[in-house]
Image 1 (cartoon, rainbow, N blue to C red):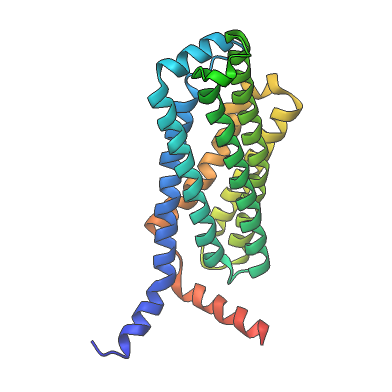
Image 2 (image 1 turned 90 degrees about the horizontal axis):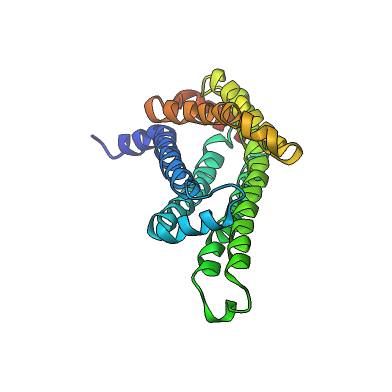
Amino acid sequence: MSTAVMPARIAEGSPRVKAKISGVVYFLVFVTGVFGFSVGGRYVVSNDATATAANILAHESLFRLGLASSLIATALYIAVTALFYDLFKPANRSVSLLAAFFSLVGCATGGVSFLLLLAPLVLLKGAQYLSVFNVEQLQALALACLKLAGEANNIGLVFFGVYCLLIGYLIFKSNFLPRILGAAMTFAGLGWLTGSFASFLSPPLIKVLFPYIMWPGMLGEASLTVWLLVKGVNVQRWKEQVSAARESFT
């Protein structure tokens, strides 16, 4: 194969490679995020600080493993954000940048949530400087931190919901991915936004609706992940949109 042909082949495959990498990283976000949520959340007993504290101390290693998995999921989502910005900027650079901003703010909110999830381990480990508090007070503070972490997650879902809506718009705007995926991501964004605002307005209601609210978001993002893994993008149309975007700046 000649040296002139090689760069052309690499350039042609680049969008598809970007899409495949995005799909792989997105899939890892699902794996680590679901594991972190299932492991970390299983030890919290609602409105029972004593039982929650006992669970965490009895399973400290698994609790820490869940936190580490959630932190990895957040780092991977930042990588997905960067990959998606590069993948979708031919459709609309400004909207792609705005979407990245909302995603990064959501990830930063997740970082705050992670700190709050670490707080119970500090409070319950019996450090000398905490001796001014009795055991019941420390347990109550630990449960309060866990509940605040949940509220921080709900705030983060607002930004992730907007992010999914913007990605859905970019898919509609582009012609290198099926528009049904744009509908799925729009559906996902509406699901996350509904869940977050429902938790603010009616906490008792969210306990009933939570599974139904979670599924649209999970299915919408999962459908895009699977498509990127299996199909990628239409390279020719992606390159055409890149050319059209360059011409609009000249």
